[in-house]
Image 1 (cartoon, rainbow, N blue to C red):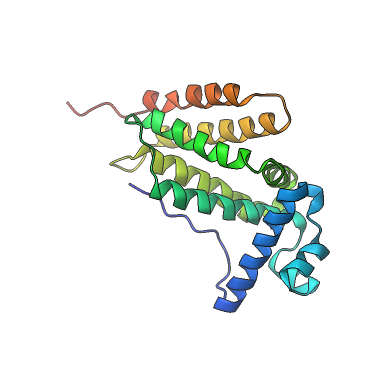
Image 2 (cartoon, rainbow, N blue to C red):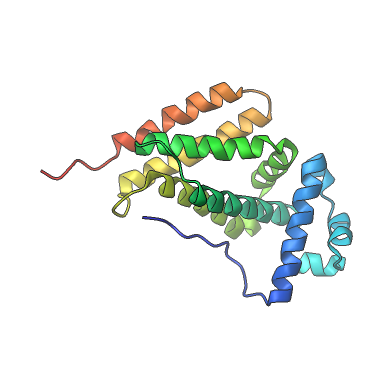
Amino acid sequence: MTAEVKPAALQLTERQEARRRRILHTSARLAGRGGFDAVQMREVAEHSGVALGTLYRYFPSKVHLLVATMQDQLQHMHETLRKRPPTEEEPAARVAQTLMRAFRALQREPHLADAMVRALTFADRSVSPEVDTVSRLTTAIILDAMGLADPPTAEQLSAVRVIEHTWHSALITWLSGRASIAQVKIDIETVCRLIDLTAPAPAS
């Protein structure tokens, strides 16, 4: 069973969608160079070739923009993971392998990762739809890795939420220098054992 998640957005024309993608690309590039503080809306507009007012119509604030950038990054990760699914046999190991692959992708762009995580931390209620989409994308990545034959049970979905929270927390502690990659791997593998604990008993 696979879960298809698209970021929530208004219907855009082809030209508007191209403009939006250009803005997101610029945001990721600036954040990748200098983190959260390097993403200035005026500079994003200039590098994207759009008016500042147009940029604000797409993204009302820098936090909106960077959360949308995280949506975009997760969507790319999801597509990559579908093309190259995990090789482990057991669901718990498959999810741990998948999340560590995603983690290493973010590790290659630490300034970008820090900017996106800070935006999530600063997000208020006005950014709730975008934050919810980030959560749904993460959930979809985990469920795809689990490779369930049937819809997930309530217990399994609860386990997925705990795994998601742990993954985000591990990312924050690594970015702040309070955890090594080795510790992150141990934490991820430990929490993924919840998948085995919440698996439905085989039918007799």
